[in-house]
Image: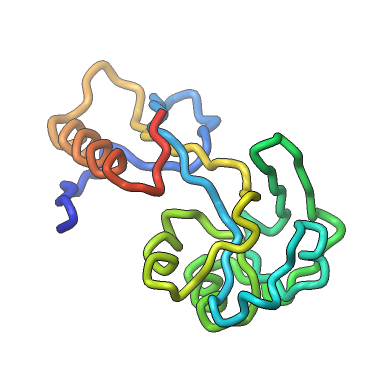
Length: 169
């Protein structure tokens, strides 16, 4: 059963640190993007990151320039080398394209975790991943935070710390 997170407009969840100095920001942790594809296409998946150039790929605005890294801190970038087969600014559309077998997508683990568990998607090149995206809670600079915002912060933090796809700070 999912925990109930109270609604609140005094506080926001953001991916990446905000440049606005009028905001208080507190880091929560991070979510890692991974490469996924339809499990039916598993035999045709690339065996190395370099082979991705020859694969059908699906990208979103924030994940259009793929940077992949492995546990040995090796990095591969696909800024100029790769033209994606499908490009959409909606990650939900990209998620559904990957599930339908349209190609390989780089998506946040939080978005694909359940589909991997249900075997609708599979992790492609599991030793490689995108750079972790840090999550922050932000709220206007003031001396006190509302009771509703505190309740939201607590409930959200508790919820995230229970998720297998979340890496707390």
